[in-house]
Amino acid sequence: MCSGQQPPFPKEDVKGRSASAVVEDLRDRLAETEVRLARARAREAALSRRLHQMKRFVSVMEILEDYLKRRYNLQQRHVASLFSPPSTLSNNP
Image (cartoon, rainbow, N blue to C red; front, side, top):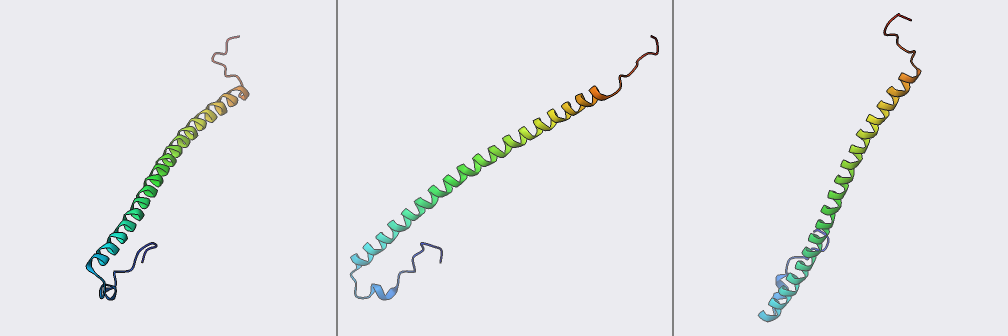
């Protein structure tokens, strides 16, 4: 049984009870079940929102990572060009 689940309605409880008492008990159990269902749906909605936020965060982090990699590569090439010997395009002084 899942947490919060009620056992099946026992038949021996029905014996000796009026129909209205049985119906009232079933209504109470139905109301409790509906409350638990509403809580579960609210929790699912909250988790879905959180998952969506986390996916957006990961997407932004991936974009930043790509940008920083490009910037790093550009800086690396720039530094390498500063330390490389000047190229001579012509041998004329």
